Image 1 (tube, helix red, strand yellow):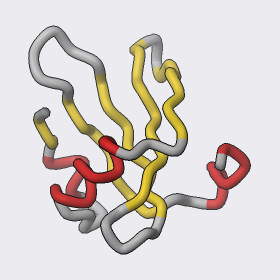
Image 2 (cartoon, rainbow, N blue to C red):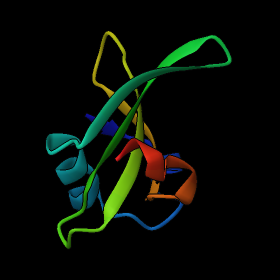
Image 3 (cartoon, rainbow, N blue to C red):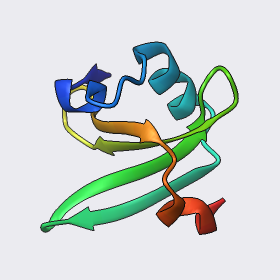
Length: 77
C-alpha cells in the first residue's frame, strides 16, 4: 500500500489509515472524473471514523485521501 502525500494533508497518521482500511464499516466503489476509486469509512485506533479514498492500481494500492469523517458521509454508516 502506498500512502500518497495528499492522504497526509489532514494529519491522519499512517497507522490510523491502515487501521481504517483493515476494518471497513463502508466499502463503496465510486467514480471521479471517469476514474475508479474506492471510498472506505472505517475507525481510527481511537474509534473516530475516517474517510479514506483509494485508487486501485496494478501495483500497490494508492491511498489518496484520508480525513475525519465529514457530515456528507454520515448517511452511509
